Image (cartoon, rainbow, N blue to C red; front, top):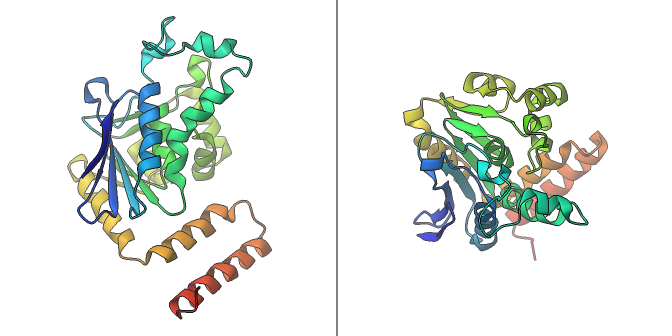
Length: 260
């Protein structure tokens, strides 16, 4: 069932309603992103049914996403949209607009979902950050990541900096961002940026297999485990141990039928 299909974004559900596939549908532009696409991505998060447990994020064609559409950097910008200059001239320097763009990426981190990016070809800038917004990344062996914002005089601002540092460490994240170099699939897997690298022809099947493995575990256990792991870096050991006990207590009460 297709729930959304506009502005370069298609959201579809499987027959059981437990797996949603979010597809960027601009293969002729290597799935370049613009403001309308970000609004559609944010809407996809808002309309996602509560039955969905796994979201697969993919791009049509040979590239996952080549990043921000270069029209954004022209004086005119996108037709009918504010230009970068207009954002800069606002009293908040575009803070509110950027916050709305970030909404397109943040919902993929919700604890009640597990998001998987299936990445092939280019994942550059905003495309790299969309992959980083997901919990897990499966990559084709031709995948190439790059963070090009700094070379354009900007910074990565679509929620990608926090997960990048968490995955590869500060020094490597800094080097990747300020040089704008390509991170190829082999390095991505070796450094923890990718969970798995497969031949390009096997990418979709590998993503579906991972979704099936996630669905095999009880949903509430997956939600509690994700919440524990996501919060671990911000807790002391003692706080993490207490969080584990609290989560396990909830699971035991649920399994014993003692929940309200």
